[in-house]
Image 1 (cartoon, rainbow, N blue to C red):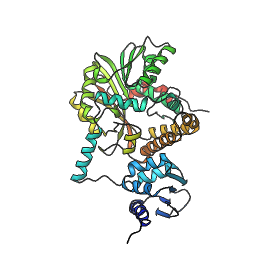
Image 2 (cartoon, rainbow, N blue to C red):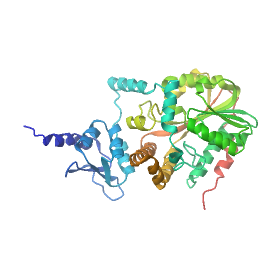
Image 3 (spheres, helix red, strand yellow):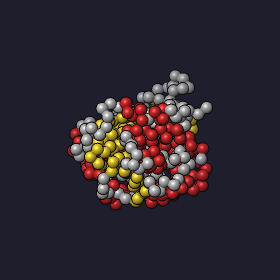
Image 4 (cartoon, rainbow, N blue to C red):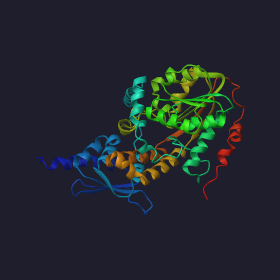
Length: 420
C-alpha cells in the first residue's frame, strides 16, 4: 500500500534516478525537498573541480525538472524554487551542458525534431513583429545597464584578450567595415539595425548613405535620436520596416544579430531578397549565431521567456539557400569564444547594475535575465554555439583574391590598445 506521503518521495526519486544516470562529469548535490540529500557524479578530487549544491523547495519542482529539464530548471531558478547553496549558477549550467545526452539519431528522433523545428519557425511578417516587440521593446533601464556605450547587442571581437567591452565592440564594427570593403559615398543597408550603432559607424567611416531597418519601435526612436544628436541624420536614416518589403539597390548590405529571427522556412526568401537588393558589384555580410553540430531545436526556456520565434542555425541549413539565390560565398569566418567573452562582460555589468533593473522589473525578472546571460555564455563555452560571418557577392570579382585586405583595412582593429 502506498501512502499519500510516499507519493512526493517517489516523484522526487524520478529526478534522482535521472541524475544518477546522466551526471558523469562534475558533481551535483541535491538538498530537499524536505530533509533529503543526495549527490550525483564523481566526487571532486580537489576544490577546483565542478561541484554545486542546489536546494529544491518543493517536491513538484523535482518532478517537473525530471520530466522537462530544458524548460523547468530555468523556471525553478526564476521562481526561487531552486536555489544554489554552494557553487555558482554557471557551475550548475556547465555540468548540465557537459552531461547533456546526445540527440536521438533514429528515425523517430529525427522526425520529432523535424516536426518541432518546423512548428517553432513560423515567422511570418506579423509573427516576426510580435517576437521582436517581446524582446527588444523592453525598457532602456535593462539594456543600458549591461551593454557597452554604443549599445551593441551582438558578439564583440576580442582581437586582444585584454580589451574592454567598448574596445571589442568597436573592433567588431571595424572588422565588419573592412569585410564590406566600404568605399566613400556608397549606399548601405543595415537589416536589423538595433539602436543604430553600426549604421552610424558605417555612415561616419564611409561618408555614404546608410539606411537601417528594424521592427522595434523603441530601437527606432533611439537610433533616430542618436543620428540627430551626432549630426549624422543627413547620412543615416532609420525606418520601421520588414526586410521583405524593401525595394531598391544597395552597394553594401549588412545584417548583424538579426538572422537568428528569420526562421528556416524563410531563409530562401531572405537570401533571394539580398540578391535582389544587392548591386552587381556589391558586397553583403551576414553575422549570426550558429551551431556546430547540425540542425536542432531552440531551448524551450529560451523560446518561452527570451526569444520567441528565435532559432540558431547550422551552416548546413544556411548555405543551400545562398547557393539557390545565386550568390557567391566569398568568405566565411567562425568566431568561437568571442561571444562567450562578450556575455561574460554583459553578465558582470548586469550584476553590478541589477538594483536599477530590479526597481523597474522586480526580482523574478532579474533572475530570469541572469539565467539567460549565464546559460548563453555556458552554451558558447560548452554547448557547441559559435558565431559565423558570411561575406556574399553577386560577382566573382567583387572582392580581392586573398583575405589580406581584411587585415590591411582593419589595421586599426588590432591597434585598439588594451587598458593600462
